[in-house]
Image 1 (tube, rainbow, N blue to C red):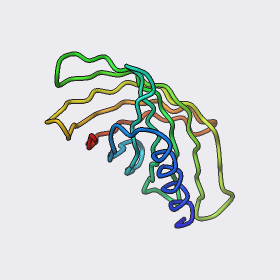
Image 2 (image 1 turned 120 degrees about the vertical axis):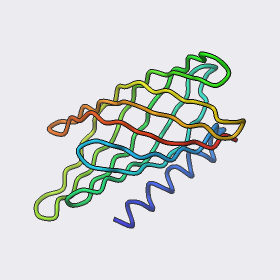
Image 3 (image 1 turned 90 degrees about the vertical axis):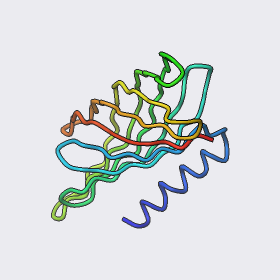
Image 4 (image 1 turned 30 degrees about the horizontal axis):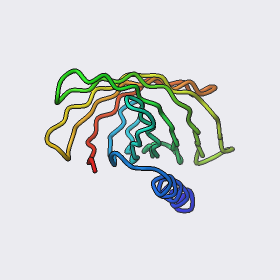
Length: 147
């Protein structure tokens, strides 16, 4: 598990070296189990962001996802932004007994972000993940630090 976590952190760091980072995100994921996530947000075009993240779930065995979502931002006023999202993910589950599952899936959802000040914002997301035999709807609450 430590090797996989280190690999995910290295991937995020490599992507951040290649592109301009808009923010660093930390979130709690609420679904059938509880998870924590960390990621970055990078601007692609004027209203489009790419948000890769790593999510670890506290469940039976080892469960994590590596997601890459695209957000289309609608600025409602100076503090509120709403964004639909779509992306891909890699799902990994290693039960305590049995074989590991590694699957590719897709995400679709919506999120809202509130800017607290020039550097901090809070966000909430609702997302559906299509993963063969592991489809799930979940909610995320988090904060991000803007650069």
